[in-house]
Length: 291
Image (cartoon, rainbow, N blue to C red):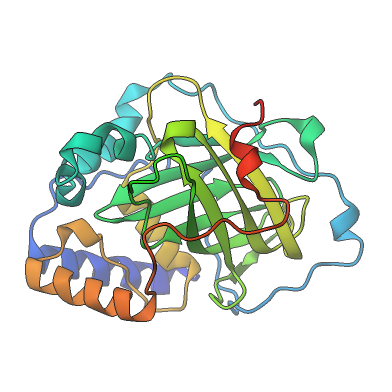
């Protein structure tokens, strides 16, 4: 995305937020040296095909600083989580729901010998989850809407659908943001402290443009923290997407706008309380296997 378009996008988003309520929590944390600093792109958004022979390449192992060293970086994400009114309604199960927001270390199923060398960062935004991911060859942002729900079947992992936007690190000028192909599923249960899932349109080695990339994850040891703010992730999501598109932080919306957005979401994506587990490499046994 060119600088002029990017500035217009940021100004439009700032005007929308200012017209609703002041956001005293807005602080740029994206340029710190934690994890991944997302690359901006102005591509077509279509299905960028996998280069010849790319599926046979080994994964790129990202370099991450030691987690937990700069606690000030995590404060904004922790603050928006504590201000989330939807989470507060689940007081009895609040700790389980809050634990979903954290840094997850990820293993690519096709390359188990590499270990948990990759990352997904999840943040609550009312009843949905935003994320940042780094799979080595591909990096970007993801949206899980709706997010995790507690149910009477506490031992059953829930199936969550998501869409993603991002770029290949060797082609940062072309973004991928077509929701018909850039999507995936996660199975999660905070009780087990594990998740499994897959990205569509990403090869098993983490290269965007492939068929499907299966993964499994577990929390990074330590407190459930995330080195990004909601504002960081939504800004990156907008910059990867079509020009002029502006996403809002859901929990900052006025009540009438929030209710209208939830109605639109639920009409478009109706869901049962606990969807059935799917067959294939992503099975419930992944939750009971050793880390």
